[in-house]
Image 1 (spheres, rainbow, N blue to C red):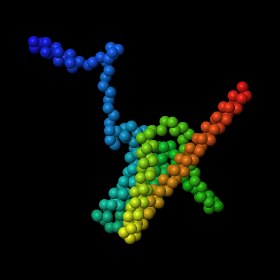
Image 2: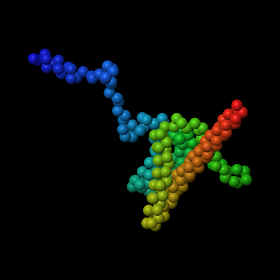
Image 3: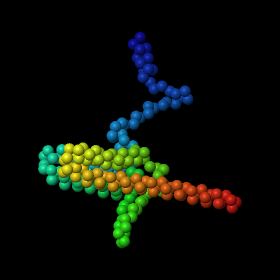
Length: 205
């Protein structure tokens, strides 16, 4: 009787075969949360730095004044915001969404926006694209709310800090908006040109 029960338990624990007679191993579950998103990203380090200096600027804005004076807090917050501006403009935009913008002053004093973009974005990682645009829009939105709050309380010192950070993050947002728009226009022009050439070749045949 004991041997029969032992045999039955072995049968219950044995892996079940599919209708085709092949065993189907259990599918691994994808990790959730922030670590799961970073694992599915093509450029996890770029995502971290895309948010790092934004977060440090906000943390210092709210808490550094507890341990230091307002002037030092002002300097450190602006420095972190400047680091974020440079990082987003030159590194994270190029890696995460294949875009880059820069501004040039010509000899006649006129301002020129220069946009760069990858021609083929079919391999873009959705996690990277979502993380980039979310951080790009959330930062100026947060600073604009803080600016409005401090203006309403007539605290002009911290309003000035929030305004500087808003300008730095807002310039990047506007720059990448224009860059993305320019990239779509170039892509549309390339598709139209390709269709025209294909139609011309078909008519020649």
